[in-house]
Image (spheres, rainbow, N blue to C red):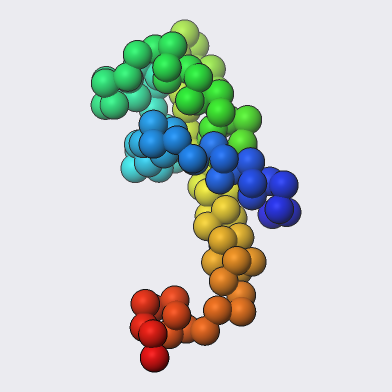
Length: 105
């Protein structure tokens, strides 16, 4: 993952609501959820959810696929993991272990 992709991913997760949507989809597993299921779980208006899903999709963190009349949203687990790895590998590369553990000694 390059810096531009990581920045887009972190920007998408910079919203409490988008983070909730992603967490909901991750917990749902690879089968994903319909938009209606996400709405019910998060008690979110359809237009608001559509906006957040678009941001997460544009950042490559989720995918959507039509299944008949339903639209399923799924977390892209490899991309979410790559974003976490980017943070750990690129941002903390030269930080000593005691600092990461919260120690000041």
